[in-house]
Image (cartoon, rainbow, N blue to C red):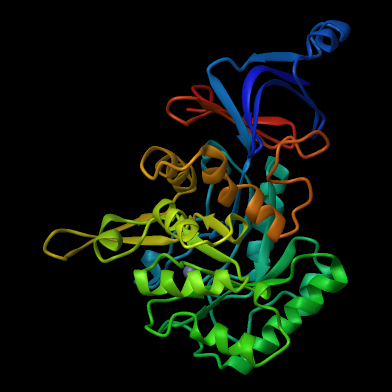
Length: 386
Ligand code: ZN
């Protein structure tokens, strides 16, 4: 058991300074003071952590990342490695949803599913989407609906690419059929059953999704377009999509070159969307970690690549607060409560009694993780793991 004392809690709503009791895999209590309880417990049973000068936030929910690696588009040597548990934990991420990406030839759903199971064994919560960029999807059972209904770890479809030279150039009808299969899988299993959509650099943006929704009974909430900060034109489409009730996801991993070419950071995108009247609960960030990010010098020569990291999520929370001037609850919602609710991840994304003991203790000034708990276990402690 752990008691975290005198800590400023952002659940993500601001709850003020309180004590948190963690027991088993859950948050057992959040109270003004748990001193009486602490003194009644046998010595040695409880570790007391002094939370003065720090803040507690929910463990981050990363709804799109390449846990088995990504890349490969520069040939076999450009395939990126499988992600390590320690990297994810140190970034304050306690729930992940893995996805395959472009390459379903040398990477497989079986491998993705095995990695999800491994991350669970190591201590965080993990799920995955079924499929890849191209249609027909690579699934586990051969049928998307069956995957979602019968395989506990699979909670939706994706990432399916549109507006991209690497997509299968799907028609609105194909996307509608895909969404209906995911939707039925979700209905039968109590899962979200959404379709994670990779939106590429094509000028058409998400117009295909608008067509699919306009021409069918599929609600727009069934599709979750990601990489929506790729440029201003796509972001504008995202504002319309979200004002009409849809969800939009923004990618935290980036490189200077993308920003120079017009990519909009998650933190800036959040500010712009809120300014345009988009409700906060429509907006999420994901890291896209594990994927490859090309690096070029000033002459535009290819230098190699870096691999995206989950630390980008908290980086964007910090930028949202320190640069965009947003308050911490607003900055946290897209990486905690919003994706957890959208994906129906029970007990995740919010600090409250009865919920999973997934929480991050951050230094109040730097907003960097001091300790990370997942399902009640301390999985990262600054200084201890490095
Ligand atoms: Zn993508």
